[in-house]
Image (cartoon, helix red, strand yellow):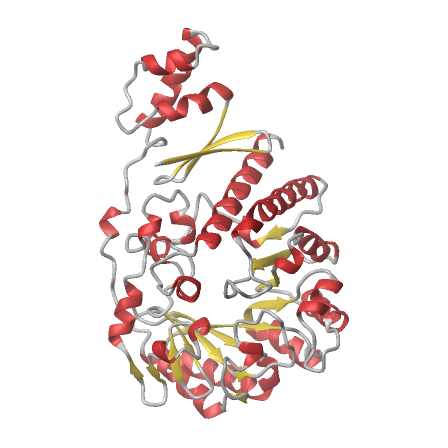
Length: 453
């Protein structure tokens, strides 16, 4: 399978199975539709007739070059992933989202977690439940040595004392078990003070800092519980944390909705504030929600991604580049085959735990009793549900079969698929369209920076 597209003056071709990318000239690009798996060395008559504006010698020479690409495995390469088609192993659990707070000090208008309480009672996780969750992870990790715990919410810094105790307990537990636990956290930054900043920068392998870009957009979408704006305090706190961070990764992350379809301005406003690693995510909301993205918005969103891609190239050449999460792809050293096929591993390798100790496939399933998988309090886990999630991959998601982007998105987010389509195996069309556009922009950026350095 191949995918060809034009972007910013580039004629690009992606060979799906090999992930080989070629920046083509005009003749090569126009000959591609005549190429198939059974391509022969001689130029097809129909190609010569259809492209009569070019001489036979020009077409033949180019055809031979394309034939060599095919012979070298860079064009219509064989499917090397078919042997994993029936992948469905109930793998050890290696990652846990620990919901230490089902409460929040913001009232974000698009919050998937019902402004922090996940549709239930506002409460904080106790140290005893958190300890049992860490014990559960270690007990179910099998031979996995590298483990991850994301301290999440709501707003986890509202339960800072327990967070500190849990990290300290995790450091002791990992040594006894011969494991290494990477702690991460996601925070809205409103409560960040010197103590919290120092702790996060010392203990957290990765931190995600939530901010929506321009002040007017942020304050409208992410007000405090009393309705007042939060931007100025959050921006100042994030800058203090980032400026004092010596190691580990750190992202500022926002969300765009129908309220700010001009979201490239929000990305660039964060870049102008000096942030290096930025993500602005498309909102996922019920179709009747006024902030939900619609199919009719796609052309405008595509334009924004193009604008952003071109600005990234411009700034990179000026020596003030930044990273936009959705444009970052590694064509040489990507994830392993299994991760390519099933993505994050939610419900199988990855779980979420509530303040009550209940287990769900991931944080976005929390509150949906149909997906309660067990409890860390009694070490129970629904193996049949784990088995169901282990089989969720691009081969079991019908829409993925003929999609050129399948090895980059792994069939999309299972939670979003269920929320929008009612089925974890049914990718959401809008999310698919956005993913394909972002990938085209990412490939174009790489080609532009490499060929016009």
